[in-house]
Length: 332
Image 1 (cartoon, rainbow, N blue to C red):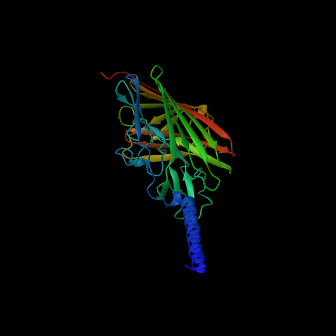
Image 2 (image 1 turned 45 degrees about the vertical axis):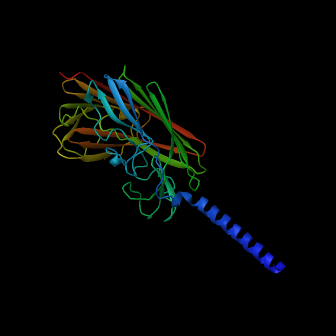
Image 3 (image 1 turned 90 degrees about the horizontal axis):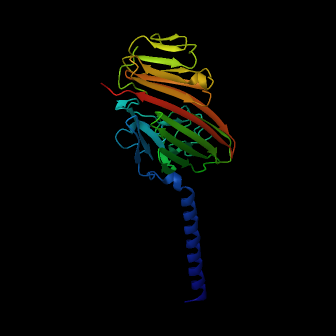
């Protein structure tokens, strides 16, 4: 073989190697966006407590499983409570107690400056791809390009889940949720810690979507509700304010929603629900001010959502806590 031929062959091999390296590098940089079938960790279920307070909790929620369809691209999949009973009486309905971060886009990281085809992070859900530049809606079918990594530890009546996001265009976070269940007190305490692991400032809003029920009794005067502070403006005629009491004047026949945009001090956002016969009670408290509240209801459940808003600079963390106390007497 002539020297020139050898040289040309070696040059061709070198060019091929360079091309392969370039392709490999490009694939590595776009692996998130090209992954149209992200891997999902196996869902785990934990049953905690006894007949006084029994709690069923899921981690690595698989929204394709029956009963989880409502998670969609909305609710935090790291962990959720799905059942709460006391002496066999149901105190949370079938939607359970999922969390949501960034309900109306406030805290969907990278969404505001994302162009079509860019990636952004829906906390608790994963890395999504922008398909339009309109306002954020949780029902939009954004392509899910990467799920989030969760680390679960279990100790006695306590489950801790830590979720770490990738860094997308400088945005990132780490979330820890610690569930502590005390059957003696009838209490569930959820401690949240959110850390900015990226290089850009962000603010994130959070609420717990707690669907309270009094063993499936109709939402009616049977429900006695004591508020931390009276609601100044009540948009529904069948809900009346009497001092700190929320009085239900009739039974709703369908699902509904109203929102209170007045900020509330921590104790003002607390509430207590008691059945008229004194057989069942639910108390909700928290250690943070509610910058707004949303109330969702159905014919047999009530969901008062207290929203927390936090801002964090890179390296900063924020902590807040919700506590629920459930009690019921054995049914006759």
